[in-house]
Amino acid sequence: MENRVAVVTGSSQGIGLEIAKKLAHQGNRVVINSRSAEKIDQIARELQEENLEVVGVGADIQSAEGAKELIDKALEKWGRVDILVNNAGINRDTLFLRMKEEDWTEVIRTNLDGIFHCTKAAIRQMGKNRWGRVINISSIVGLTGNPGQANYSAAKAGIIGFSKTLAREFGGRNITVNVVAPGYIQTEMTDKLSSQIKEQMMERIALKRFGKCEDVANLVSFLASEQAGYITGQVLIIDGGMAL
Ligand SMILES: NC(=O)c1ccc[n+]([C@@H]2O[C@H](COP(=O)([O-])OP(=O)(O)OC[C@H]3O[C@@H](n4cnc5c(N)ncnc54)[C@H](OP(=O)(O)O)[C@@H]3O)[C@@H](O)[C@H]2O)c1
Image 1 (cartoon, rainbow, N blue to C red):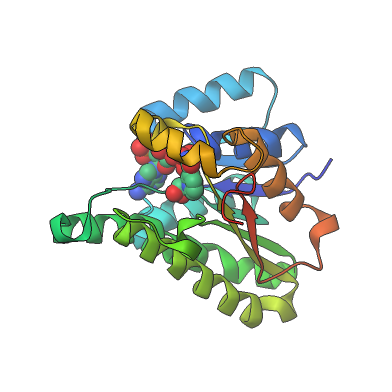
Image 2 (image 1 turned 60 degrees about the vertical axis):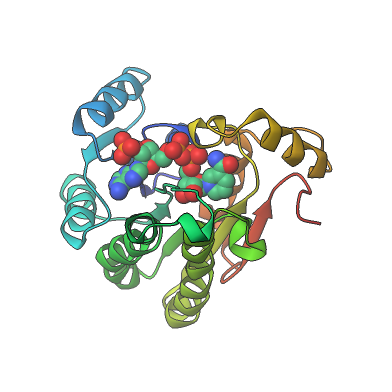
């Protein structure tokens, strides 16, 4: 049992929801989030019925105001934020020559600016408490690049430099900052891909199966735990051996 307060951005479905559930089942109090207040409140109610300490906040983490609203809600409700999982992310895939400026800005604003805003709103009080875990969800393509994902790869690579810098700036205050870089995980984001691309991906995966949201949640819950207290500034790849 951990009994910490966690905020997981973008947790109405997929990887974020699985992380939130895992942390809640371990005894943490968890704030879940998506842009849709209606959707997230409904999920929070379902989890509360399982006796989990969860509250939902509809907020758009693209803006400083949305991020502040999210973190303030956690502080109001439970007085602290110990664990921040920056998970919210979108993709707008297209080859670079066809990529419109809004495809670029929308992806950077959600996947990179969002992490800036949420971390900014949460990390100062972690420092005061001399304990904190920031876990940023990047992607294997932030390390390797991928045709059709110049915007997404740039944002996901940016997360890595950001996290290493914060690991150095906040290590003295007992805050760890790490990056989780998943490969292909089965969610709505990857369901949209064509069967041809899925087959090509599968050929490259050493473990011969796509990742599950629980695979990522298990790693995040370890990084959020007391046992991971001497790991910081790292990029943990979880891709079934796809990018070997
Ligand atoms: N699936 C994969 O194979 C894979 C691989 C590598 C990395 N990742 C990364 O893992 C994370 C989760 O991916 P996923 O596959 O679980 O995605 P997903 O199923 O599309 O879920 C994304 C979540 O983010 C929320 N969201 C999007 N924009 C938001 C915003 N501006 N403010 C607040 N919430 C927002 C969505 O809710 P609303 O739409 O209701 O706001 C949803 O809850 C992302 O960062 C993704 O880039 C995924």
